[in-house]
Image (tube, rainbow, N blue to C red):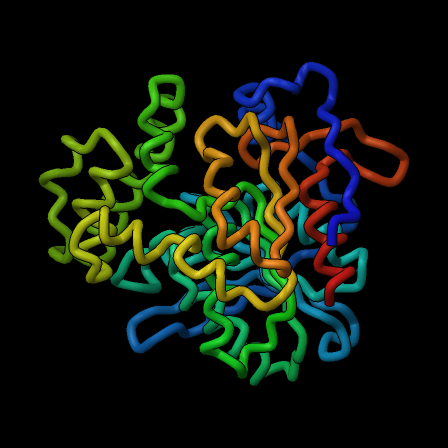
Length: 327
């Protein structure tokens, strides 16, 4: 499972902050990527999620890749469409999942999403098995979505009906408490402010969609992700506190149970996802987990030099290569 080449950053992009911000801000094109079919899939009695689906001509004969975005992301994020572009060319169906409330779907659920909410991809996979006769799935996730992908892999022994055969995660936040703490480091202040800006705007949209459900009075006083999670995320999902939420929603709690091939791609110079979380005993001793720890790459950046047959987005290509090899 360790056949990937080492990542070499494009010129000028070796620094962690630089490649992180560059990848986030850069415009990209996806030659030949068709318009997806949009589906609304029910998760429970109150909630639906939106999935953007790209199909092969004979979809039920092909494997399907479910892609999960990061915090405050959506199916429109560049890495989501990059994964779709690469996987489609390798013969995969691709499903870009907007986790509940994301991608303009606040009206589809009264609740919020959280960093370990595997119920959304599980519901989507089961719905597509039933509706399309699909029989083989892999899951790829970035950052928060990477935590969900790895956590789902650890929960599979309790869901023997779920045909997920491999997972890949890029810079996954598998220790949520550690990552929340790292966002409070002085050098990461701008990242935290950016995430909070999106989260606060989402809460205001939720309040308009579901008047009276959420108390917005504390919103302007919140200065950290942990405070936001203590005030909104944890109570809304029954965790009580952010501490309890981070403990129960972190994939780190279940990595020892993973029995399918799992790839973790990470960078030593990631500004706010410390790589120490990938070096715990439950990961090091699990032969099903391969950690590809690179010197460069930043947070979900991994922008290398383009070649004749590659756009240079190394993590996307490595993830697609891995799930193809292990499917």
